[in-house]
Length: 307
Length: 285
Image: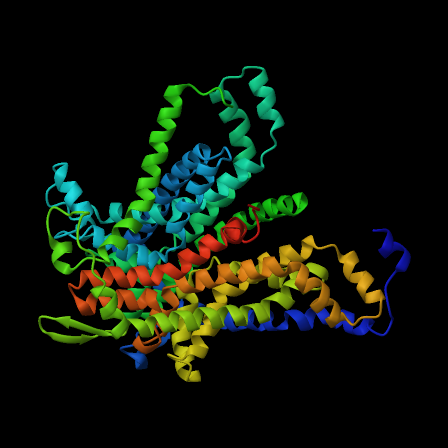
């Protein structure tokens, strides 16, 4: 610190360039931003138009009609229901499972570190490929999971090809891929907690359930919030796993927002409806991401502070 | 905390074993399947004891698949090449664009800096199709449909926020005093950036690059929407392969193994940085 105070700013000639420098440095990133914002605004315009690729001549502004139609459209309510259900179930289960595993692995030991690295592998597999792996394992004629299901008396258990169990199957794949994400974040959080409160509690013989609910959980809350919001933001937009596994089927069982928008655009070529769906999804994620970013920034400050 | 009862230790071990089995079994099983002939795969009950064959990998690598109905051409090696090319180039572009910007955001508070940084961050959480669907039309007008150039540009949506926010954190961790001292010794701004800031942030930049590579490699939806068969990476190619080759399950399994090996290897290599990368710099491992 002393060096900056005594030596002040060097050379005067570079003052002008110093002012422009950060702009010059961030200009390319800024241009990419603009390049992305243009299609975003185009999507907003599409969402206010009657626009079908099959009938380009009939393209015209219909203002809020695409959105108003949703109110009486059972397919839209199904999309909303399935998306919320999918996000709710996956994130809740992943949080419980991830927290449990993180607690099991909390103590630093060779075996625990080894296991935590192994558990990261599913997270590093492309979700679309993970879905294909599970597709092979749940194949009705040779899949190992279909075979195991038949051993416990579930003959003809059809996994993703039956409307009754399709949601369960994709949720299972999501859990397999993303639980490690929550686990690794919470594990890092657990291991960064100060040790004194725990030592004091152990010394006083405080019951362990009390320690968990009154010390561990409150101190872990910022990490839990960030991990949960992170996952919620991704999960409500899930596309890869569901599309690779069932393409939204069977029927419309799994037509979550992005899958429905994709099918609307490419199969029924209804660009207006597709764009309106995505704008609604964007509004949901934008609201969530504002909450998320606040939390995320707080954690980031803390991580920088420790460095 | 070593006052655990034997019962508890057994319960913990059982729980951990179940966890490891659940998360590792699919990888293990697909790996086995990739060395099996279709007859072995279709036999019931499934067995772990079999005579392994490399025929699946051979078929993928030569691009010729012998089936009962004749020889089938498979372009999987092409997909693998596309994945490597797209991921490497996208990360290189993101590093060239992102590292200077990260440095600017870390060192200078300037008008709009936080706005740009947060706009980039918000791309990470916006529905990708919202941008991709209008882009299909822009790409047609611009002649960018099904070009590597167009794909690499869109891949910046994943790579750039990651690079920017992680590398920014590494630059913030370096004390600015070192750079001041070097500047005072008469060196130019660029020399300071190149000789002092870059080497000090080097490991962080490398880790961010590796992570961006993993995310680019694993991306599915960008290429699904914007690329035709000859430009598709493995994630999209493997899905197309399933529908085209029908029941060649052994080859599908080996295609999956080949597709996931690079990211798994890199993840093991860079695991020390994974926590920080996955949380975009919010949590340190």
